[in-house]
Image (cartoon, rainbow, N blue to C red):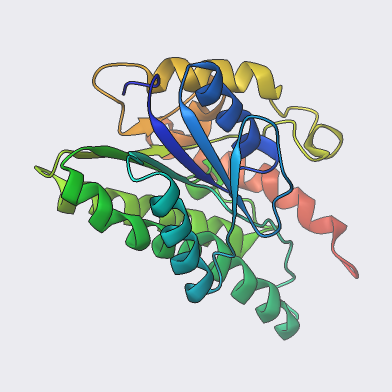
Length: 246
């Protein structure tokens, strides 16, 4: 995809990978709007309040963005939460509902809000964000894995349904990246700058890859194919010992 001279909305772009991705698009010469629940003014960026769990908030954000930027042609939807759950305790359902509402339904709401605009233009890009955990579950975060697997499947269907419209659909699949303390929780987390270098190189390819897979996530994505899946899930299951009473 062309990464220069685009008009880009990054929902979930006020921190972490989203904020870094927004900066890379801006550095490449694109106009970028940051969406978040309570975005603070940021130099060089327009901001829009958006709560992806609230349908009305998503539609209000759509109207604000398209009024100010009718040439919008890239939508990145990456709002997400990562919550641990103890499936032996029925109270985990609160975390499960929050996770699905944000990660999966939030993605669908944002895509739904902007798809008619992009299709009417006959040109544009939708970038969804799943996770390596969509393909290699982390049992400590079961609903997170399920939600991101859902984002992957939904993205595949969206790509098929938008074929021939001029709107391309790609899925960014991050591994653990060193943001928001991830480097302390997971020493194997990739440095953010290096991760973004790989992502932007892959996005700039022609044609745009349907899945944006940096080297550090390929072991997750292809674990079943490579015969490493069961062993890796067993290793990840060791984290369950951190749950109370385990």
